[in-house]
Image 1 (cartoon, helix red, strand yellow):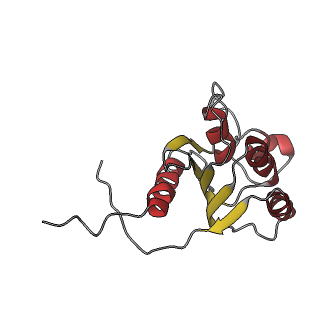
Image 2 (cartoon, rainbow, N blue to C red):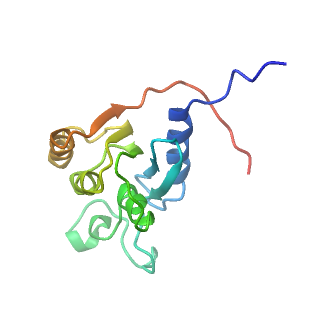
Length: 160
């Protein structure tokens, strides 16, 4: 008997885990997941977008429009930030991060500061937004490799 040939590739695996992590987000409009992986293809950390620990997601707004204090933007932690914070002191130098949405400028700063050297992203729907343009500039200036995930079309169903 020979080995299976239909196993998923590393990029499929880690992006799949990022997409599964995004399902934990309670954000009604944008769910984002992140998976940090070391050079040995070991998962170092996971994250998704949501309110900080101890903050009730029933007491704060999920709105996208309105004044700063009336929208989610002043309160939500991004998936990349959560994944970096969940590491709890481990060294991320040389790691790569798989994200379902291209990192914003604030997350880009954290990615650069922690030594992550590669960002694999699924979507960049805000590519023309100033914050995303700033993010791309900083990541490229810092020598972080940016890779658009190439969809394979593979469908995986998980029955829970």
